[in-house]
Length: 69
View 1: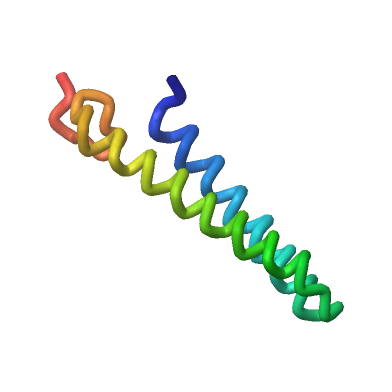
View 2: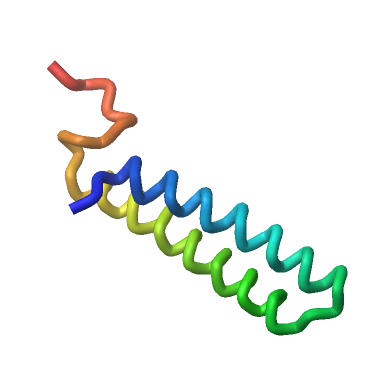
């Protein structure tokens, strides 16, 4: 299983790529590319949320936990 940092970073990459595709689709009036970009952006949001949930469910591996021994 991927760790939360991997999910979050993959999500960030998907969101960025999706925004680029979406903008390219708008600029070229290509509705298919624009739709694919929007879909990829949503996929990235979901991956980042998955990483956040993993952090919340496993506080021992939470990257923001400052109470580690």
